[in-house]
Length: 335
Image 1 (cartoon, rainbow, N blue to C red):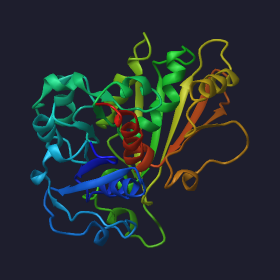
Image 2: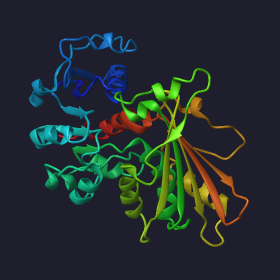
Image 3: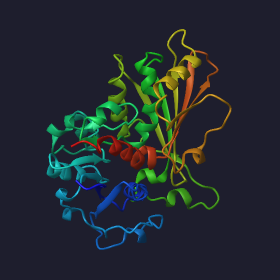
Image 4: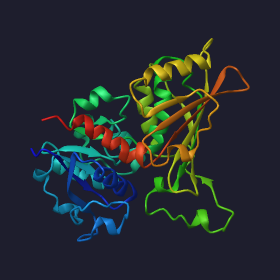
């Protein structure tokens, strides 16, 4: 093994792939020795993303990658495509998958939500769900990581400690999330957001029918004995990056917001990227854009038996590439 860890990025030209390559290029301990794309080749990635100043290998086709030449491979590929590469690479290289293909534990759940039969159902249980602060110890012991989706990251970070400690009811949670359009990928038609001049557009989509619902439910129910039910209403904003999730929850009897704040602070005391805001400072998209932070702030409800929880992340960093790199730091030293 080289002094520097060598990594490959397949799917390097999408929004998440470019963000990942940019962040990796800033790390002096990492050598990027392969950049892949499904359709583009023989291109300098700096021509696609001017933020990337470091001289890197020219982009090749994903299928040209030789896993014997790298220590870790990042898969920034669409679902279905990613699992075909995992099947090929498993057992030969450490894998960090940023698609949805290995986040779910059950192949039937995957089929119901993604409308395709999983090609490697036996490998689903081999991957650790890479929610860094929650599964830190498990990630350290595993070579195969499924990076969470952006919406689930913003929702699970505040809710898991609260359901785990039985502080909120789990049967009537309302989740209202808003994302920059980069969360929808490069194929998203952003003209619907900007075609009205100064009157920027903004709309919800896939209410209670979003693919991330099963992922959120799966991970919450791993942390409570209770059944979890919630409504989920995602929106697309006329901005490039950033994500805000607002959750409306019923408190358990005699539980105060102070108790919730204290629990969150204790849960994340060793993780500097998670900040629990308890003062009057406003948290907004500008606060988290281009960072790996998650800001969590709790608000009183007019009904004292309820709480409003606001969580903000950058969907491309903490919601994808940044969290993938956090996972990389944990598995990097494994043999």
